Amino acid sequence: MKEQQKSNDRKAHWEQIYSNKSSEDVSWFQPKPGRSLALINDAGITKDQAIIDVGGGASRLVDYLLQAGYQQVTVLDIAQAALAISQQRLGHSAKQVEWLTADATAFKLDHPVQLWHDRAVFHFLTQARDRDAYIRNLKNTLTPEGTLILAAFSPEGPKQCSNLDIVQYDAQRITIELGPLFKLKHMEQEAHTTPSGAVQSFNYFVFGYHP
Image (cartoon, rainbow, N blue to C red):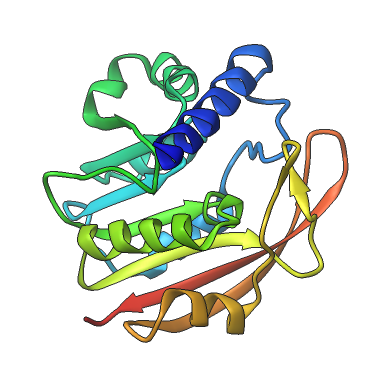
């Protein structure tokens, strides 16, 4: 019951954020998620292979993936209000996307994916049990030899976001957290400028999954 309550609390927090604030005013907003797009393109998957954007809610990544011709895109977010923003923005094209309102620590897809993308969800999981549940879902969803692209605040980045504590990650910490089945292939740093003009330091990690 305690775990369910925590998930409900997380959902309530994010539903309120996206119900009360413009998606273009939140600190993580990107007009074009260029780094994510480049890393997805470099992953070498074909346009008919499945991608999931975890925490993709109101992100414009899905717009650019559709424009690039990707045919199997799932967008997962805990906040229905966030998904609704993207669905309204995409209009008729939203029908090409699989939308999933769920907690990243507690969901199940009925199909595997070749690429799992997460920009700024995992670093909100401050409890080991939540990280374990997330990684268990990751392993159950990602195909063998699939690609994980995960972006999180670096040790030089903020210690909080949206009034919530986060966990900062460098290459060593994220590699230990994910475990030996995930092999780090590439890492990049990004200085993200928020709509208010602040600069936040992110690390982007690309892993191969080798069970």
